[in-house]
Length: 129
Image 1 (spheres, rainbow, N blue to C red):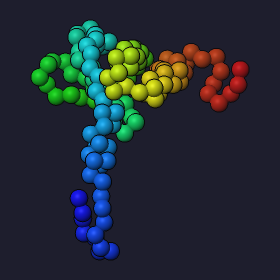
Image 2: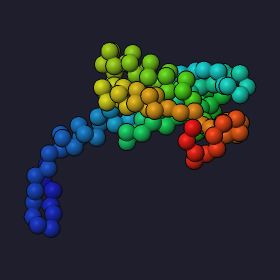
Image 3: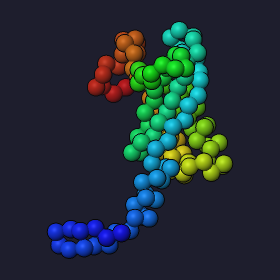
Image 4: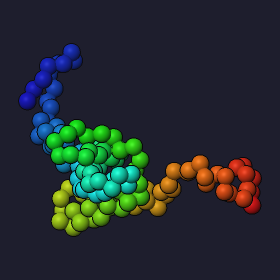
């Protein structure tokens, strides 16, 4: 394919452009069901990876719109890691980097602080024990 530019005609490799556009590792979605911690009802959870970032969404019925997850729990990350590891061995578009990224996130995971945590601590914030 030849395209015209201001500087003159130039060759463009369309096969490379098409292959990079359709790469499966650019976007990935994994879905599962679990129990809503607040109500105990069944909910659908989706983890979508795009541009090296994971985004979690939830919905409570099948044919409803996805909503951003208000809080991402450790259990959600562990379920995602389990699904990635199973897909990795079946060669379903999961790379070593995907698995390692989620493992690092889990290693660094700290639950959000609650109001009671700061009151119960023996040392005030900013001081050392």
